[in-house]
Length: 525
Image (cartoon, rainbow, N blue to C red; front, top):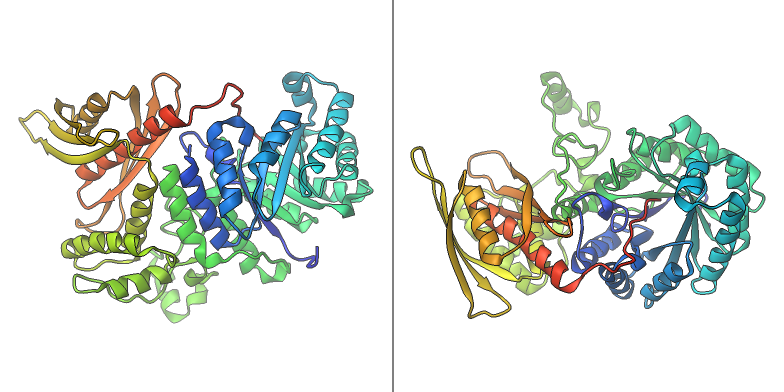
């Protein structure tokens, strides 16, 4: 490690983040996020858990071949088959990392693994050695380290390093520890593992008690030099340490003497992309990337800001991707102005075809709104990108609703079956409201065995002419899998229809092409 003050960022949005209920992503969506993570300049992308499904294997393999810059990491249990499949998935990556783990807490060894400590120790040594024979860069995690007996933890870490592990990850798997305890644990590992200087210490903290970022910071202050985190803090249960929080803490608090390689100006774009693909909203008061993170309502705060920005802002909005000055965009703005503005917002790698589609959408919105701001552009660009990536089984041709006091809400829908483009599906349904009627009609036409479990709509900007963003989740009535859909339109009825159909298309994509293997399993580090 050339710079002792460098903190490496290991992003696990595509693995642990995807384990958030309903946040399932298809391989193409994972690839899009991975490319954005490369622009963000994370050091490691944990692309998935290849043995868990055909889709996860495909995602890791594609990312390994197409994403350059960060190391690409695949997760595997300390099982020979898992490790071999993970190594195969990494084929083509310029920088490969294989991450293997086994539980070390007494409660996990007894009740989950049904193994003795000696058996766990033997298995860990054998599997790290086997992994090292396939991939040079090996990360080892003693799962549930936060509740493990320290003497056993020291022993298994020393063994893993001796067998070839180059990174040792210390997970607070259930988010149980406090910052004081977790910082001391890292300090004790440094002082009691004889060969710890041969590996980098990493940490992976969960947010069950709201302490993931605080625990990660405590670990860094006590010698850890890699943090495993996710965009927007998404992940299993209450989530993980938030990447944007870790990056901006170290950027803002220069006195800590630590740094990352993160291009923080890509944080807002990355946050919005992950939110749109996962269907998980970012709360308005979320640190760094929330809508209110740089908003000032109090008169006293506003007065102070007008006199000197640093009175109430400890970060520059520009540092996270919010631009202070804007080129006004309206109905007469040309494609060049739009392209320039999108590039300023981080969308600087758009194809001519995508730019043309975006300009069409922008022109329609500008005619309706007269002035289009950055939030609109983020929504338009993200929405266009997502619609391009979804495998379309059914295309929305027409939707119309009638409703009002004294009338029964009715929806008429026309779809085109893309598997046979001559097959036009038409129908009408009644509902308790216009959206209910639309969803009933689409479900009947597509014959999708699914149930709507979540419907959320929000305005992108202020005012009656705002774009409306709709997020929908559906549950497969048979497999219980959850799929999300997103759309942004000025007409929330049409946005609702498109979002629901996007979720339906994901349902059919997974059902017809990416069925989980019988060995499918989730991993909670």
